[in-house]
Every structure is written in C-alpha cells, then in structure tokens.
Image (cartoon, rainbow over all chains, first blue to last red; front, side, top):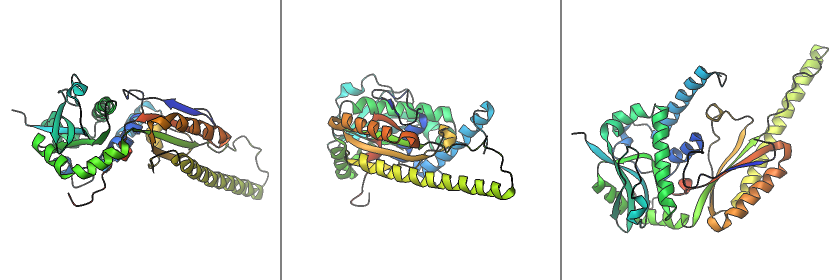
Length: 72
Length: 255
C-alpha cells in the first residue's frame, strides 16, 4: 500500500479477494445475533471470543512454521 | 441416521425461489426458504456431527474449516443480497429444525423488519486508516555521551507519542467526515496485526452504511481524505458488502 493513497477492492458477487480477517470482523462480530439452539452452549462462553482466540492461536502457529512474522 | 439441523444465513422480507436455486450451502446441501410472519429466512441442512456443539468446538479451531464456512456464508448473503435487502445472521447460527427458524422469525418480526427497512438500498463499506510507522532512528550518528544518548531517546519517544496522538485525532476527524455521508457508522476494534501483518497502527477500522446512490460520492471522499493524509498514513476502502455490521437487532422486548 502506498502512502496517502487508497486501495479499492470490490467483493460484489463474491468474496474470494477479501481478507479472511475482514470477513470474520463482520460474520462474527456483527450480523443479526440470535442464539442458535446449539452454539449458545459452547462452554457458556460467547462464540466470538472462543473463535477469535482459536484463530489467533492457529494463525500464530502457521506464521511460526513459515517464519513470516516474528514471534512476540 | 445422522441427525441434522438448520443453519441460518439471513432473513429478508421476500426472496424469490429462483434466487437460491442452484446455490449450495455450507455443508454442500441446497438452500431452502423458510417463510413466516411476512419474513423469509435462508437455511440449509447441516449434520450435527460437523455442526453440533462438539463438532463446532473442534471445527472452530480449524482455520481451513472456518474459512470455508465463512466464504460460503458470505457467498450466500451476497447472492441473495444482490436481489433484495437482507439482514445477515452471525456465522454458525444453528437451529434444531425449520420450525424453530419460523418461530424465531415470528418472535423477532418487528425488529427484523425495522432492521431490513434501515438497510434497504444501502451497502456496507469498510474504511481503515493505517498510520505510517515513525521513521527509524537507526543509522543516526552515535551519541557521544550518555546524556546525549538519553536526550536522543527522549526526543524520539516524544516524537512517537505526538505522532500517535495526531494519528488518532486524524482518524477521529476522518470518521466524522465519512459519517456525514452515511446512514449509520460503527468503529470496529482495530484488527490484530498478527492476523493482518500490517505495518503502522490501525487507528481506524470503520464500517459505514452508505446509500447505493451515494457510493461514488463516498468513495471520492475517501480518496480525497486519503490524499490529504500525505505521509501521515493511508486509507483503505473495501466494499460494497452486505450490511453485516448494521443488521443488528435492538430488542424492544425480551425474546
């Protein structure tokens, strides 16, 4: 990305070009949030928190194996 | 026999059957329409081995599984959303059966309709601001004395703090300026750089509900504000999305 510029991507009609993180921001953090019959009972913990924790853990593990990002 | 349940993607007022014909759901099964209370939900069957409590607990830890389900969910919402106003539901909302889905439409009919009215004719846009990382002092002349070293350190810290404060003020102003062209706006938490790998600080992760006839003006404003940022940072615009961040329900009474 260049300084002082904008990047545009148009996901209309499909989402393949959209970063997974952007998608999960919306699919997990927003939308109509009604408790389903099943997800509500996952360890009594909100699904979003459970999932984001899992995602970070698994992305970290992948990054470590590819060496793309330094460990904290 | 494997027990199955209903995975819910979205609600809308009315959805012509042909919009979902031939579209496949998260577990490879076809989409169905469930109608009640003047509303229509899009659902598909999932088996409880994969999507039950135990299955979800396991699968949500699996990044590939999560991505696959998220992409299909998004694809369904995009497909239907291109035909009519939609209220997308959160990922992995699973009901026992279609009767329960219909009950949910009944009990939330007023709120769902208000939500659909709000997003009608609008799309969601994402605008992020990344501040430019402070220029590294590496390569500067070595300070001759301990005092000079401390002064240099203090000056560098002060520059960093000032820059961060300025970036935060810029982000607030950009958010306010963009909000004037929108029906609604929200600031989402900054994304984790461990997931994005971005440089600098994400000082704005905004979601904006924009009328479709205003989308060009909105994009032009983002471009203008991005240019005005000069070396302060950059703006990134993504969209249009279905109104994921704006279909939230505000209960008027307990469900």
